[in-house]
Image 1 (cartoon, rainbow over the protein chains, first blue to last red):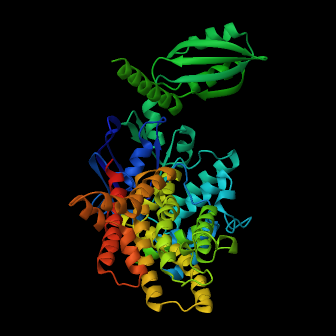
Image 2: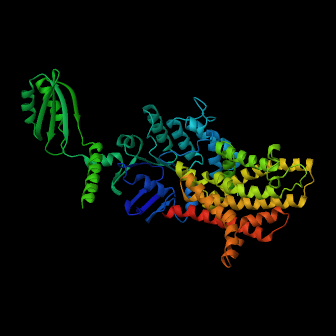
Image 3: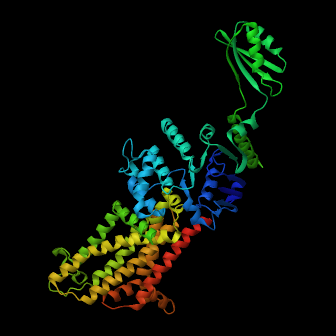
Length: 323
Length: 249
C-alpha cells in the first residue's frame, strides 16, 4: 500500500530523516514511534505531499508523492499534529468547505459531513456542528481534524500525534475510534508514547535520530527484546531465607533476591537461560505446602527497549555535538 | 474552477468576520464621502478639491483619482492576511495536502479579495446616485472611471497577494505591498518629472496614477489597460511561484 524507499530529508544542514525504508500493508494500523525530534512528523509530511523529500521516494498505492501528488492527496486523509483550522468558521461550514476541496460532489457533501460528524462524536451526544471552531476545546478540535481527514473516505489515514493534548477519557475514545477505523482503512499514526501504539496498532515502526530502529508487530518486537527470563513469585509459609535456599536449588535458577511484602515474601528469580521456571516453582511450593499468591514472568518490556533506543539516540546526539 | 470558487467564497466570507476589513472599508468610504460632499465648514477652503460644492462644476474625476491613491493603503490591508495567516496558523498544511493546486489557491484567494473590493466599489455607487440628483454627471467619466478602478484594484490586490505569500507576518506583508504600490502610484510620478530620459520615460510608463487619471477623464487608455492587466497577471504568477517555492526550501 505504502512504500517508503531510502527516504532522506535535510532541513538546510540538519538531517531530519536518514535513509528510511519500510512498507505498510493494506489495512494495517501502523504506529510510528519515536522520541521527539526523531523524524516522525517529517516523514508523515512527505507522505502527505506537504514537503518534498531530499532523496528517496514514497509511493501510495503505486503513485509517487512527487509526480502524482494530486492523486496521492486524494487517497490520503491527514490530521497534522497541531490540527490547524480556521477559527472564524463553524464546524459544519468548515467540513463542507473541506468536502468541496476534497472533490466530493455537491450533492453528497451534506451526507459526507453528517457521516463523519456522527463517527467522530460531533453531532451526538451534543450537537457541536454549529459551534465556531475558535470556541472548541482541544479535544473537539482534534475530532474536527479527524472528521476532516475521513470526509472523502480515504484509503489511507495519516494521523500525527492524534491523542496529544487530550484528557484520559478522550484518549481512550480516540484509541477506540482508531482501532475501529483500522477495519476499513490503512492507518498510520505517530506517537512518542509506547503504550498507546502497543494498544492501538498491529504494526510498529520505531525510528530514532532519523533512522529506522526496529519494526514489526508488537509481539515480534517484544520477543526480540526479551532477555534472560525473570520470574516474580510471592510466597508464604516459610522464612524468606528458607524460601531463597530452596528455590536456588531448582536447576536453571541463577539468582534469587527476596523482599518482605507484609506476611508474604516477594522473590525475584533470574534464570540462567530463557527457561521458564514457573512450573518448577509451583511444584516446589505444592510439595512444601507453601501458599503461593503470585507467579509471573517479568519479561523484558517493550518500554525498556524503547527507552534504550531513545537513550542511544540522545547519546549519539551528544557525541555528535561533542565531536 | 470549482475549487477556485470554493476558496474564493471562504475568503470572501472571512472578510465579513474580520474587524479590520470593516475598518478599512469604512475608512475608504469615509474618505470618499469627505471628498465627495464635504461639510459646509470646508467650503471656504480649497473648494476645487471637493466635488459637491455649491456654485462649482461637479465632476467624478477627482473622486476616482483619490480612490486610486487610497487603494495604495487599502489594498495591502485587505490582502495581507490572505496567505500570511495560513502560514502563521499552520492551516497551509491542511490546505496544501488537500487535492488543490498552488494556482487554485492563489486564484481563489485573489478572487475572494476581489469580491470584497467589488462590494466596496459598489458602495460608492451611492455617490453616483447623489450626483444624478444634484448634478448631471458625464456618463463617459463614470463608466470609464469604474472600469479604471476595477483594473487598478485587480492590479493592486494582486501585488498585495504576492506580498502576503512572502511572509508569515501580516505586518511585513502589508509593509511590502505598500512600498511596491507607493512606487507605482506616488513615486513614479515625481521621479518622471524630476529626471531626464530614459529614467523619466520608464517612470512615466509605470506610473499608475496617470493611467488612472486618464480613465477618470473618461478616456479608454489602452496602455493603462495593458499595464494593469500585466501587473495583475505578473504578480499572481509570482505569488504562485512563491507558494510553490515553499516546497523547495
